[in-house]
Length: 443
Image (tube, rainbow, N blue to C red; front, side, top):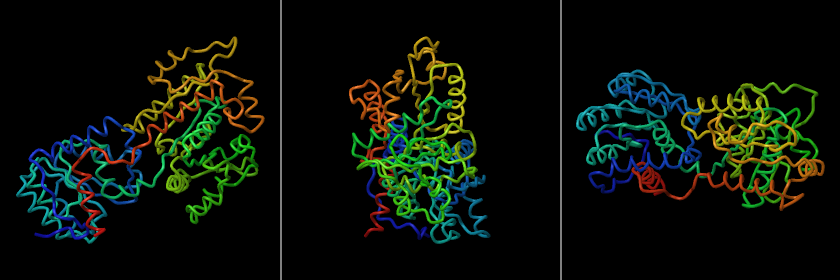
């Protein structure tokens, strides 16, 4: 018997005859009950080859490969199952990860796995998708140091979770949550809401928050916190080769014990034409530095802004209750649902509700039209918000008892409540396998 030598593993523990199936059901149900657990899944820059025996699993892999969480992975899908893999790797080097699906009987599958191991390069990991709910088969796979066993039928999110578990379980513990705030239309108050919510999270939870003002030419975050404009965001994007946690910390402007601002230049001496992935390194470094990254997005539609929205853990759309905002919000929500099919839908906030003598779409009708529940409705209070803006203060600093201050606290609390827990969940086969693997490495 030939093992995959790159993966160290202790001896398998005893399992009852139904634990393979029940463990997979636990994992699928846990993801279904709490979709925001996706925020803890991280896939590194890896190459993946997948070999399928059935069209259903092939469709699942295609769907998983198109998910935002798999943006760093290069996925190649082939038919022919394990026989095709063995034939290919007699002639080509193996990738970092191989996903194998087979409908073969356990004995035949194990023989095929042994043949695959003989042609795999050192460091290659293997995830098996099988159709046998057989504990003895599972033990034999673990004895061959297969990285994970996923029992079919499998869904895209569970497959992504399995891949993340192989590579990213412990790294994910250090990654924060990215929250993108965007307006359905210019001037609807998305930036004001982003600033107040981020500041409230930092104040009420004593959690470190970085707010990045992504409107490089016209950003107002520095004004709202009584700071001069700065090159924080621009330098972080342009100096990507040196960007790390140390440089990021130097670029941040401290606005309190737990709140920091990455300022925008706010000048028109140049155009900020960014590549599609220009802000990805900034987001990745910031997420590895703090529990919460707030992206104050400009009302633009270009490649980098679209990619930043699609890649965010949570998206909060702000609109005012009129027809243009309804149209834009509906278009944006439709796009995001298509681009992020396995994520919860974006959140929606109606702002400036109740302007005197202005015809408005009723909040309930607005929500029904876009098929979303409202996260919050913020009343029109021009004196309160105008005072806060002119004084460079947050709304709660102007009036802690104001209704808007309570709404911002509720929004912040609701967002924080969705942050994926770092505590262990119910027993499942995949997590047990990963614990065994990393435990053996530590030993």
